[in-house]
Image (cartoon, rainbow over all chains, first blue to last red; front, side, top):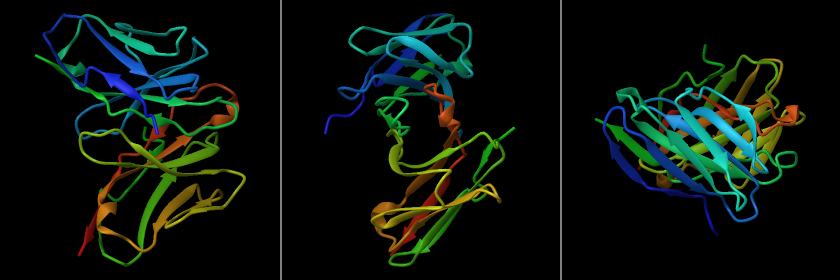
Length: 114
Length: 115
C-alpha cells in the first residue's frame, strides 16, 4: 500500500539558512500533520492542515511556516535555521479528520544544522 | 509538563511471553488514544487505537486496555516475538474537538524481546 512520502530524507544546512521539507500524503488522505522529534525526545506536534486550510497549531516557531497545496501535498518552510532545529521532521496524514483519527507517518526528514 | 507519560524507558521480555506496556495521561480532554511502534531511522507505525467510549480493543496479538477513571492505558502483546523489539509510543488526542488535532506523545518505551 502507498505510504506517506517525505523528501528529502536527509538535509544539511548551515545556521541562518533556509530549508524546505516536502510531504506527499497517502492517496485520498486530506489531512496533513507535521512533527519534530529531537534526539532522544518524543515527537512534538507543529502544525496541521485539512483541505488546504490550517487546522491546528502546536509548538511551531514563528520562523517556520507551512502550507498544503491543491494536490494535498504539504511543505514546511524553515528560515533563519538554528543549531537547535536539528531534528527528525515527520509528516503524517489521515483521512477525514472527523471519522478517523489514526495518523500515518512518513519516514521522516533528518535535518542537520551546522 | 508531560501530559502523556510512559514511566518505563525500557522493558525486557522473553520470546513467547506477554509484553505489557503502560501509559498514563493527565489531560481529561483526551478522548482518543493510539499506540505506535518505531524502529530507528523510520517513522512511527500505527499499531492500534482506542476511543474513550471503550475500555478494550483487540487486533490480533495486540490488545489495548483503557481505564478512564485512572487515566491509564496499557498495550498487551501476546505472544511476544523478536520482531516486536522496537520503541513503543503512546499518543493521545482530544479528537472530538473537530479539528485535525496533533497527537501528544509519551517519551516511549524500548521493548526488547529476548530469545
